[in-house]
Length: 420
Image 1 (spheres, rainbow, N blue to C red):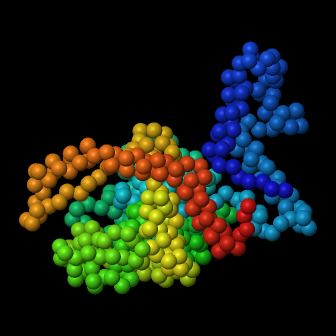
Image 2 (cartoon, rainbow, N blue to C red):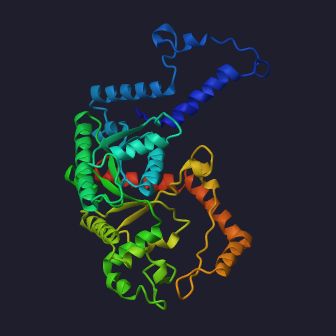
């Protein structure tokens, strides 16, 4: 006997089909239909009804029945993993409390919910206040919940606040929150499937490891940038630091197709005299040290997809780091439409201006770039090409679905599960 948990989206679609047939069918087209009253249809089965008004309720009841059958028929029951497979997956997402991390992490949460999973979004109190203040809707999507913790800056981090104290309190509060959540979830029979964390909260991986829960880094930047940082911290740091300000310097990194100049590299690699930059580059360093300490090959979910950056995704050996393209994680509001595929309907064009020897961008250079972007057919064709690839990545059965399934298969094998 096999029963699968249907996603909320599938159940709603099925409910809609039934409703449309029931209430919107045309008697002249269908012929005369002698239909029972709706209230009689969803009566209990013993009273002649189907027992359920919504497919979600029916699906859960069937899963419960299957679980009962498995426990009452041990000679025919498959391994315990089959029972585990029927439980709803439960994920924890812990973003760094900055907008550039929170927005893609929320978008990733929506994707996970679409698979039928439950997502717990772990954030500081101050971030939750900002989210609630800026929400256009008062409701939270089904399957998403917030778990709040205090970072001792409940009114938000402000200019002039002690950065080191803030990061120390952020580490303390988020580690404790994730630990409490994992333990309470296990206690109530709803174990956490995996913990996802964004850049700069790398200590979350250590907390998950201590509690024997799989974790993965959610890299909200392009795959190429991940590769640049990876090689910076794995053998190229001195070379880059010594040459980054040389205008004639060019850098070739393994597997990447382009020669990089100093201005192509992250500014953090150049200016470590600034306290903020020094703190950030060392947080990045700690992040890659955490990945290196993983007992199994570390997994990184990247806000990109293979068709956009084919070389970057194979630049690093799978024995070192496994990259899964699950992007683009773009908010629906960019396209002004509802969800999923329609996000890719926004096309972006870009061109970098060149400064003169004094570091000043002159008016003629700005004019040249504007004319090129607005009038160049090749740029327009490329924008449409990326838009189409973007849409393909997000559609059902696209790279997000395939890569995330591959990721889940690895998680399940690691935990000893064998799922359909």
